[in-house]
Length: 148
Ligand code: SF4
Ligand code: SF4
Image (tube, rainbow, N blue to C red):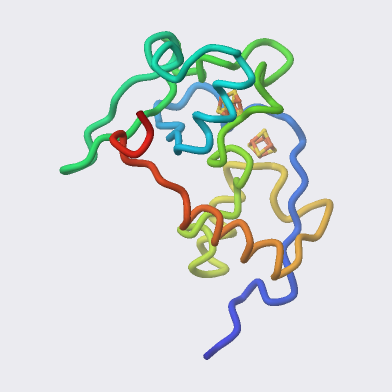
């Protein structure tokens, strides 16, 4: 099998610009393990987290949880200075930008780098590290019924 374009690793170091947390409408999907982490971070049960911070999204037949957004489309947890739940942030945020769609080709990676000034600079992440993120993302459970 051909080695992926990132066989020698990829550079990424977050510069904390918050561009991926603000202004654009989108989803921060929550997995079962994200919800467990959030429940212990907030010390409240998962149902209370859903009521306060989440919305339910219909995904063509299955339902998922996503964080609510503010009126200007900032993530509900973004405040001046950055993410207020940084230690407990979901896998989607932790694993960015090592997401399947951006790793399909070098072009896809370069295209996404136009949105994120941390990509293609700073620390190099090895093939193994990138594969670990991909595997982690594949193994998470996102269906609402698997979470609550
Ligand atoms: S857009 Fe990139 S550099 Fe900016 S906060 Fe998000 S991950 Fe970090
Ligand atoms: S949870 Fe934190 S890191 Fe993730 S989108 Fe919201 S503010 Fe950004």
